[in-house]
Length: 76
Image (cartoon, rainbow, N blue to C red):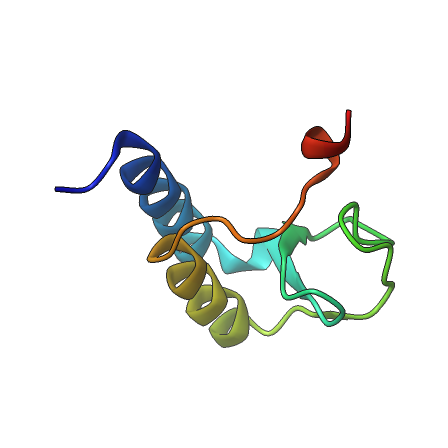
């Protein structure tokens, strides 16, 4: 049985996959960030892939697995 966190991650992943132009994938850590980000809040990289197919594919990949990256919230 999936945990509530898993279903929340997949729900967010579907929202991103449905609106890929609002997001981009960080080339440094594969996180998904808003389309207006200049640097990644997680790894501080500044290169992104904004192709809709890449964003959608990455969102669904991340939505299917547990969080593995450290986020800014984890550090505070």
